[in-house]
Image 1: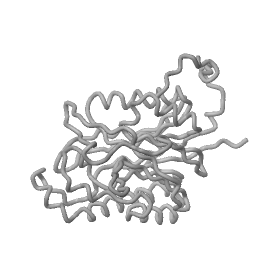
Image 2 (image 1 turned 180 degrees about the horizontal axis):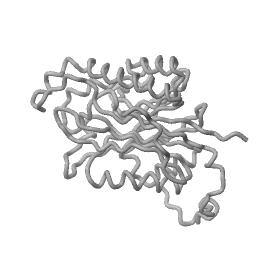
Image 3 (image 1 turned 180 degrees about the vertical axis):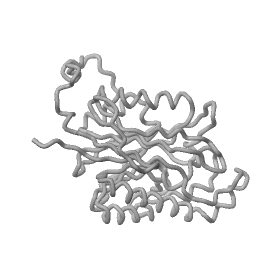
Length: 300
């Protein structure tokens, strides 16, 4: 039997709009430039799609809220008009055309508007540019650490979808999504795995010492425990005018360890994901599904 190997990519980049002001006090000057910001970031990511496809990539996941700088470092209603429809908005329309042209499956996290509601949403497109569905961020953080504060609850609410954690059947395998803060909750990855997810993408914007430490602990542990591959994409660099540094360090990991980064592009992480390993005996000799004590399971 041939092995099921999928070449997958993560983006690792930052706001592509070149005319950001130097200070937070000057942000108001961007009020009439939101479409320019969105367009610059979409064009940048389509270029990354093209670079990924040139390296044989079949599926790519962009970073969290990719069409904009990370505006949730403060509370400014100016950014709210960036929210757009997950099916008919300009961003998804442009990405559908690019996905179809390149033959590339795309996981695209956008700022979604649905009537009067707003969400942090990942749209999933197949290689023909068809809309497969969306995942809305289920847990919304607000607080601060030693580097800065974040106020996501000002801009969007937590998912009201049913199911909360959908899995998408694609031509390369079953894909799940857990956006940033979702990854910390103990029931998210097993919920996706129970529904058959083979590759889980976790697009994020994260910073701070504890977050950086956990970034390298949670994904490998969850991949081993729940027999899945996970790709974590974090923003990298800093963005004017906030100048908050994002540590990047995006990577893929499977149940048996880290996946080598094959990328020749500085804003892409690319790996060959051998999904065949998910149906093979665990090299440790363990059989966690068989030996789980159901009476000890904790419901979410």
